[in-house]
Length: 99
Image (cartoon, rainbow, N blue to C red):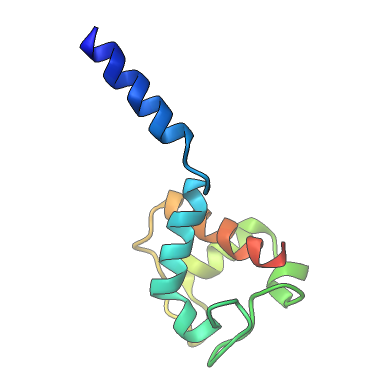
């Protein structure tokens, strides 16, 4: 009986989260690893803009954006230490700039 109640409590807590987990993870990664160069809103700072209307949104697929994150072309450092799930959540977060 107690295990059932704990399970029910977990479902209620997890079900009440309003933000998708990938945006939370992606947002934390972006703030920590990208915002200093690309700006907090993707509008660019010392690096190219990656927000709405930029080349990133207009011309690159999700797979291409993931490749840029992992490899880090030009002066951008690569983030090969990120897991596939982290990279995917970061791509989703960057894509959300256009929404």
